[in-house]
Length: 266
Image (cartoon, rainbow, N blue to C red; front, side, top):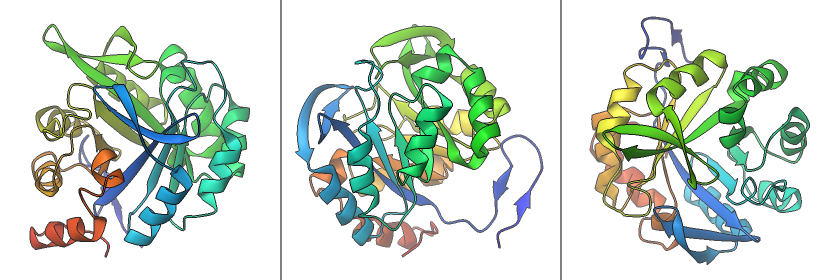
């Protein structure tokens, strides 16, 4: 069993844990899609087939996001979630359109190991407290879409369509205090560009956090994963298109990470 050390902010981590590689399945109308800077979406395959492939390749977790559920005011595609869940033997996070406890309960009972919330908890921060109380902090992933505007990073809602006046770093702090178990931070500026993760931002916020940080947005090659783990010391790195289109194979990526003295599960 890993030992948890309670120290200063930014130093609360389980020791001996391997870094995680997490493919993300962004789903619209039952298909996996991927765009650039959250727009210009194109088809990337069947989410059920992809989920199975990633589980077999050695992915550590999967994230499944119904990316238009909040924008279109509907619930996550529960039947598709169930189909995906039957194909994997690794932890599985589900998000999209979760606005109340019953939504989360249905998803967890459909096969999810965790739930991801974004716009709903920005509009109602107390919902984080409710989820953590009902299911435990370990089930609650707070996803944050951030964009650099006029010299600051701001939280964006509804799949990045709506800018808020909430500064990203302040929101991360509040989400953790309210009971988030993990933060999934997506840089909208980097998303889909394949130019690398926003390492400067990730490093900055990670030094103040006591819960795991998942980096998202910008992965374009294997070296980008090495860089984000070494520079920002994130707990996990998430990517989509480089995995969906076979540009990076997870076994090859993990081999490179190990060669760079980054602990991963093989």
